[in-house]
Image (cartoon, rainbow over all chains, first blue to last red; front, side, top):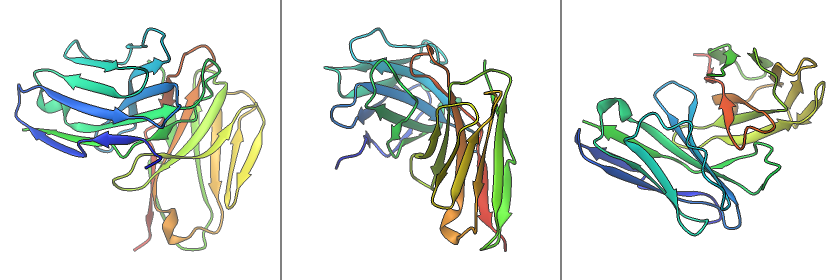
Amino acid sequence: GAGVSQSPSNKVTEKGKDVELRCDPISGHTALYWYRQSLGQGLEFLIYFQGNSAPDKSGLPSDRFSAERTGGSVSTLTIQRTQQEDSAVYLCASSPHGGKNTGELFFGEGSRLTVL
Amino acid sequence: GQQLNQSPQSMFIQEGEDVSMNCTSSSIFNTWLWYKQDPGEGPVLLIALYKAGELTSNGRLTAQFGITRKDSFLNISASIPSDVGIYFCAGHQRGSQGNLIFGKGTKLSVKP
């Protein structure tokens, strides 16, 4: 489809295991974001990629979280040694804007992570 | 970190009623946006505001960018059942790269 695609849509894992979440942004969008949404909460910024610039990692909650974006397109968010508090919906968004980003984001449906 | 205070946290609507929600911040923002999230979906942009004092409408939705640049409101007129969902305000500061700050949301439900 033409929208932001995320996979898996649901992931259940055991505490201590590593997980990878994938995001395929809208074709041609230069900016890509990861947000985390815990139950009943707003969206917590995690990381932002813009073109070939160094990513803004200021929102990553710990060094167990990392993300990469290959070829300026697909992104993978990796959570190592998962903890129960990592359970949340992880939302990816992309934006067509370059340097003059105005905050108009197009979100995927999210990956719901449950850590047992 | 920066926070947006969004209120009310939740509200019940009866079809035909007008609805109002707002967002305030201690920081100045250059862009205010309002998103809606349906269950199991990602948020979808409703309205974007770029200038202090700007009043923008999108169908039954009206939003304003506060003159101080520290607040915004969203009004929904003549609500219908499909208006239920969670509404998020979000602010963007020029020079903050892409980081959007989101409010905690206003959950709209239908009155029992």
